[in-house]
Image (cartoon, rainbow, N blue to C red; front, top):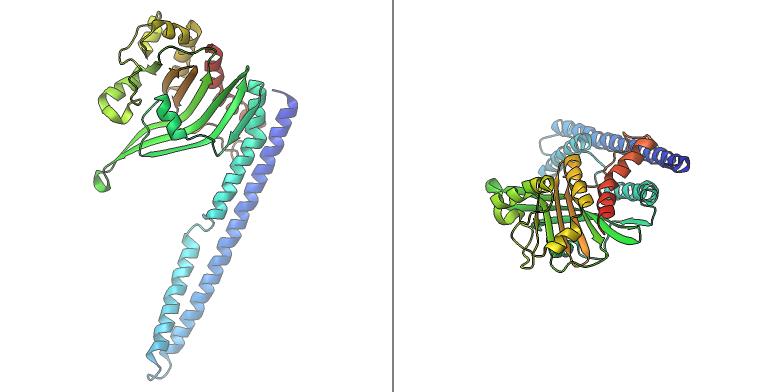
Length: 328
């Protein structure tokens, strides 16, 4: 944690906060202007209506109907201007996305570069299909609602590690019978290994395994005949108490589950209090951490201290670096 980076973060935080406050003021002015405009028309049309009531009875019907319509729409416009949150449109969405992208580029990436001592990139578009990525990795079921965001990579100790946020939901039925199953929401990593395993190795915490057995296909990990359906005991009773390992070749298991790796997974499970799923296929270790939220979700309107922001970003990246250090 160097002073130059801290000063940079604090400067960006202040700029982002000031920009957001200016935008909020502009939205308030817009709502006020819309309210005054609509209510003014409402008052005009009501005045016209009153005048119509004092006009001779032989006034054309269409003129009176037109006045009533103007009154109704004028009043409705006034109510909309007062009670509806103006500004929730494409411009607001674009502005919010610009803020998030700017925050990634100016704060998160510099912190991660220092934390991993390597190049980092985060983008909102990927050069691969995340749906296919997760399916091929057999991490979890891809629901009928699937989204992915904040794709990136980090060069760490000579290895290019991919990561992205992912949300998978399964909706069954519709209407009153509609049921929503939150399959996964969290981070997915792809870490290259120095050598390939002969057969896939899958590691999952036992609570997730029990959920799969009770809920059936909704929470399964995908179908792959090459992955063993039978759990294999490791040399660590403490690890076997928390996790199941599925593999056909024990040598592959020993290659993935080193003593350091088993200790790291146990520590992560209790620190993060969430599901951990790992599938090693070939020379890639695919890791899914079901945190229930996206990574780097930082409210920089409330958190304006550079040191706290730095610590939060490093804590988000800690599981990735810990697992990468344990994998050969």
